Figure 1 (cartoon, rainbow, N blue to C red):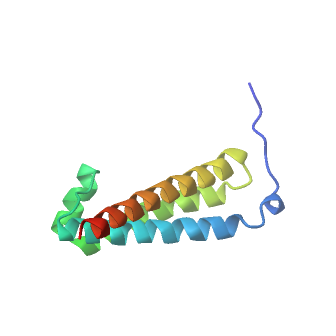
Figure 2: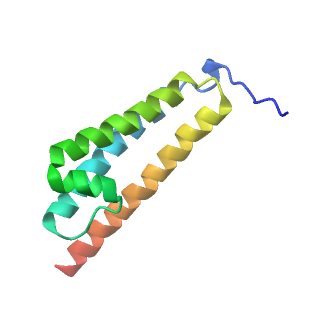
Length: 113
């Protein structure tokens, strides 16, 4: 059985900044999703989150923030393991892609008007 590489906490002193950025990107994604859906330009791709958004945007953003923050907290508590650190960076990268999609959508809307 392969042994997992265990990282010392001091090896990534800027990891806290990445985690804070991840929380902020999640919040911005939630806000922009509400804006896009409320204006009728786009729909929420996740059917469960779409039901929450249709029912109550505050509930949508609250659940979104809670779920993502709980996941981040779990990864943060396991940050001495390389798989947790890699997962944090993977999530951060995924949210950067999502932000790119939001910006592209904004660019398309602005070009069309």
